[in-house]
Length: 216
Image (tube, rainbow, N blue to C red; front, side, top):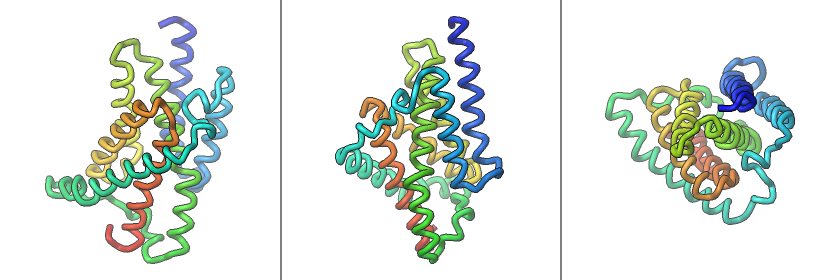
């Protein structure tokens, strides 16, 4: 690894640590950290003469195809988790996902709708831009191997899964496998983050609706 590349790698690692840890710090409300970190990430990319388009987020890539194909993929995985992987994790002795942070939306339509808006317009795009856009591409750049994409995909999925540690071990395992599918979609659709964003949106809408209705 060249000296300038090593220096960039150190900066990238520090940025990744900040992006992963800061949302759990509790310093600002959950809907605020996404705005702060996206602004910070944008400034960081500009230091290297880059922008969000360099990590796969381009409004010109938004299409109806990304909407319906990403959405159908997300719905399929949500169904698999709800009726398959989730019950299997419970059967194997893992505790059910801890969704107590979302108790405020149970049978409360206003809170439910507000959370959907925040999740779909802010939190989910933030997570895809950060994890599959920035973290995946920067880890891949650090790995000098023909297996760089696979290794970076696995590492990114592990980080993303443990980012949700508060939801319990069973949920972490499910999220890990879900993230691997998202990484595959990233590869399949040539780094277009919109497929991943709509996948993530439909998955979360399914799960939040289940919580709202009292089924989780």
